[in-house]
Image (cartoon, rainbow, N blue to C red; front, side):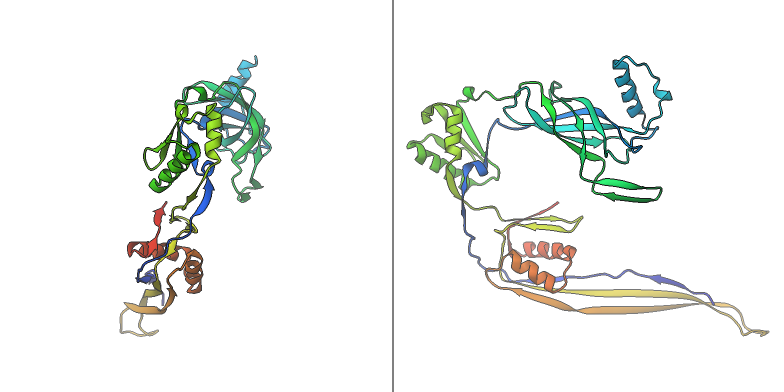
Length: 374
């Protein structure tokens, strides 16, 4: 007698019961303006270039990655060596993109860090050396030249199907691997207004910054233009120079309340919550209902040496239901992040369960924070 078994996957149903109420605001803290603002017009500039990494231990791009061999042929031609790309077979080179951030007030001769990332099908860039690569800005101009030995944070070792990889062996860095070749500084002497931009939009913080600046100079030289921008009149401040003005203002401080925010990554189950996140009194009940349906196909046959009876297929279906008792926790008034996490771990909730519970708490108004799902 033969039988086949079919199963229907179990389904889990979490439940959340919420009772929101008033909550006391968390304490603000004193912060310097330099820690929460940027200067408008003073920023990094992104650079990118295409180059070649050599010196690999047979872990480079394979032959079918034609652009790698073409790049090698072009490099050799510039050095006076003529080769045919179709006849080149090498395994110790890899085509890469090189990226860097050019900091503000950069001058020729400064050095910046670079990141090197494989473009083709190289297994690893370990032990490789980046050949001289031009790094260009959005305007197409060359701002830096990069070259140097790669430092990797991972490796890939093994033969055939027995391979062990740690972290990412196809991305490496070269500390101070690029030298700035073109001026990219900002002329602060032309500034008539210096605008301080809050990294987090907040009308209250913008108002407080304008107030503390006006108090420092004893006259109305700053105005909050919106929830993010505070404009300061350079001439009205009487400062000797724009750098001196910026330095003086960045040394001021205000009482700043960090925004309450919860960031959830549903793909990995990662949850990050700030210390300012608070909850109303909440009751959480978490349980599971598991339904399993099994269908067994059997064959009924007559007895041996019997002249009567027929072979008949028989289908037997069984249903099993498992309803686990609900686990519950109670968070009192003034509960914080630690209380929530400890309570959810106590009832055996996984990270993905916590994501669903947080979304339900937010929907019911029991979570005093922005919930961002990425």
